[in-house]
Amino acid sequence: MAPKKKTETDHIAETTEKVVLAALDHVVFDGWSDATLAAAITDSGVDAGLAKLAFPRGATDLALAFHYRGDAEMQRAMAALDLENMRYSARVAKAVSLRLELAAPNKEAVRRGITYFSLPIHAADGARAVWHTADAIWNALGDTSRDINWYTKRMTLSAVYSSCVLFWLGDESAGHDDTEAFIDRRIENVMQFEKTKAKFKKSALGKAFAAGPGKFFATVKAPVWPDDIHPQD
Image (tube, rainbow, N blue to C red; front, top):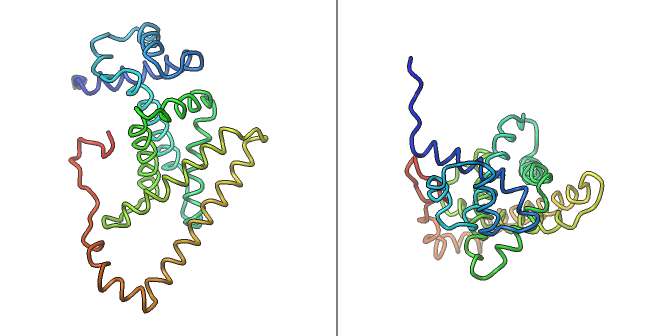
């Protein structure tokens, strides 16, 4: 059987991977910048035309590609774990922990990304990247919600993940043990909130809300994307 011919999408994906890996040698000095992108293209030896297709917005797309690569690594690592006997809160904590653990060898690149996306001109892309991670984590955990919960889960986890990243960046404890404890506390706080929300739904006030304003939220559905398009890409 003849080997399957690579599509343009395949070539762009390979180019993206090569350039992101080559960029890690430069980003610690030049940040996520056009200078880093140019050096990475040269070092990786990729076709300049394909690089333009892979990173049409230059440094911004390079930084996002690095971030999305980390999300994909986390999802693969989660798929290899046996989560059956873990409490749900522990599964969420494990996913967040894994995401940071896998990023640890490139901690400075993450720090540079925080700096880059903190600029007002890049803030929307930064929020997009965090949402992407929250979505990747929930998908890795098998989340099947398609209603308003699809949004609230990702909004909540986006806030949790952001705080965990900032703590992790300043954590100098052995094996990032302090970060592990911080993640557990933040997830526990969220679980307590969910328990409170569940009690509210069962209360008289909660039932009244569901019969009134809550009817609108019940109609909200998660977006449905074509199979060949990633929700946040």
